[in-house]
Image (cartoon, rainbow, N blue to C red):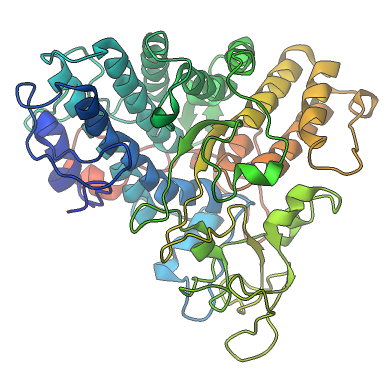
Length: 523
């Protein structure tokens, strides 16, 4: 079994086992992420040195790579940012991509169980470590416990984002495992939100402001603040209630969002990168803009495969999968003078191995077109391709070493700009924050002017557009559209969807295994 990436498809055989076994789960890893299996772990035979603690934390961080599969797919393909056309017999996969984009999914959509299992595996690994740490005498124990609790909170955040109402394990002190005779019930989303917030606030003070170089990628106070800023920005959604009629909003937390974002911006640790493209390029480790990353290495099983998802079969070796594209209407929103538009491949396609023009599989020139006539039966060339994370020259097979910034400084600018507008209406500070981001991608600079946004709604729409340009393909769009009341609206290839689809259904496999779970409204 690859203990970095557990892909069980059933609660009873996968997640429940991990939650019940707690500290007996296999742990693996070290600072360079090379695999080393330690077997059964107890406080008596492990956790005696700093290196052993780092090794114990490694599986919790390794699990983050799984977030870029099903969680990322659900967050992207359900929006107007990403579409995966069926091309002949390629990318039909039982209709999962079509159903995700059209909002016609049900509880059997395979992405749902994958996202659930990935996140709860992270929760289980955290709970196992926390249980063992209770009786262990280890260096920097408070900091390690805080780091583990914050990581567990992050995995719960992912579950709350997608499913809303979820079971909590480890929400009571000392309760880290599941009684198979008393399975955990579904907790309301507002209570899940409150638990995650309390865990992050409790952990924050015991986390470092900054790790030494060898601790790159580990949680810091800034990472916790970034997550809190995101949660407070979405507080009306995350603390609200969803029925078949849609969302009844919870309490707004705009000032809290500003305060959390300011803690990041004023920390002296992070800064905007002068070169926007470098944030995502190979070798982007320790970019000054990164706050919390999913780390990758160009090694088997440890790399990012985003380029494989999007490039044509003939553009790279090994042959990519010719899938992920964006909608023509979304591509059309980008200003031609905006260098961020360079993440899209349109027109004549080139090999990333030779640099020469490539043909399609019919030996005709491969020319990517924005238009997709029918995404259920598209041609090889239809659809603008997304290449925000370019190929790594040191890649091993499909594994590329680009780190994925889950939170970065630019998002803090955007969070603060939006929260200020929600509190005060149109204001110069929000405009200045947007212009700071635009200045590095426009040549010559094309600043926004406050007079052009005389109403709160006008500036709100502008900020939503700026989030699209800046954060495209970073799994933020679904949250943004939901927060702005646009997620269920119609767009190309998608009719208006039911208001309850701002939450995904609890996966059917999990309902079958745990009768205490309650399905979300509408499903």
